[in-house]
Amino acid sequence: MEFLRPLKPSFHLYIFNFRKLTLHSLRTIDWNPLGTLIATGATDRTLRVWNPERPNIRYSTELKGHEAPIEKVAFNPVKDTELCSLSNDGVLKVWDVRAKTCVNEIKGLGEAFTLQWHPDGESIIVGNKVCLTQSGTVVTRCIVELQIHQGALRCAKMLAIPTSPSVL
Image (tube, rainbow, N blue to C red; front, side, top):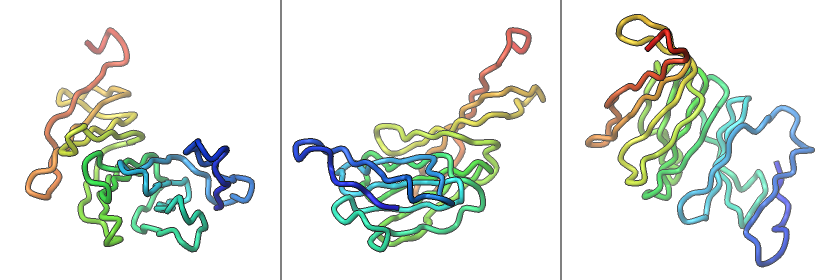
């Protein structure tokens, strides 16, 4: 993967050159809070952290561990080197990009496809396509809130979003 230079010196917009990508179908991208790192996730399970000042693959870092396509990456809004990644097999990983290690993991989040940090950096919400409510009803959307407590992730609550009025 290569970067092209910024469009104009006054812009901070970088464009990825996807013509050279054959196996790496980029799915998600995010800046860290300081704008010093970019994280990318792809359908081939590649999770990579880039330095936008040195946009060559040899200066990037690959974080290995996902066994399914990566749907979403997001940096913690208050910790510039903490990255969260979510694969479509329902595995969420929290990474220390400085140490290049996974520091936390939660499995069993269903067909997960999106996540978002809370602005305080202490919890994450994850959205998935299909889940079961406690009554056994299948809904096609739900949100799981995960909180970080003493360095460990724990499920705080799940909100099921019915897809039809008959489920209400």
